[in-house]
Image (cartoon, rainbow, N blue to C red; front, side, top):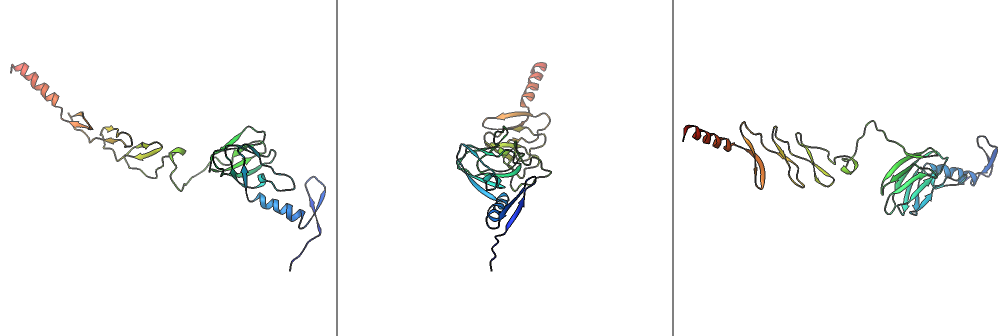
Length: 232
C-alpha cells in the first residue's frame, strides 16, 4: 500500500514569515534532496579556466556537497561561494595539472596537485586547509623523500644515510668505530676503513679504497739518520 501526501507543510525560517510546501514537490524534491546532497558526493567537470561552484537557495548546487570530485580539464581555478561557511573535501581527478581552489573574490588560495585529495574549510571569506596539527601520526607506507621523509622504514644501527639516486635514500652498513669514512661514488653509500693502529699512516691505493699501512717512510728516515751519525 502506498500513501500520497498532498497536505501543505508549513515551513518557518528564522526571522521570516511562514512558507508552505507540498509533500512530493517542495519538501521531497527540494528540502530532502538538498540535505542528501549536503551530506554526499558530487562530481564536477572543470573547464581549465575559472569555474564557480554555487549553493543556490531552494535548489541543488555543487558547492553544497560535502565531497566534490573534480573531473574534466585541470590547470584552472575553482571558486566556492562567499558568505557560505562550510567544510569541503576535494579530489583533483582532472586529466592533468593542479587546480587552484579559493573563495570567489578572495586572495587566499589552495593549490591541489593532480590526483590529490584534501579537506578544506571556508569561513565565507577565505579558504583554509581544515587540519594542520596531529597529536600522533601513523602512515601505511614510508613517507617519500619528495614529501620530506626518507622513504625508509628501517636502517642499520651505526650506519649513515646517503642518496643512491635522485630522491632515493639508503642506509649504509655499520661504520667501523674510529675508522675513516670515504665516499662510495654515485649510487653507492659511503663506507669506512678498519680501525688503524698506533704509528700507521692512511694511504691511498690507485683504483681501490684507502687503508691503514705501516709507516715505511719513517723507518727509512731513521736508517738514513743513523747512517749519517755513525758514518755508515
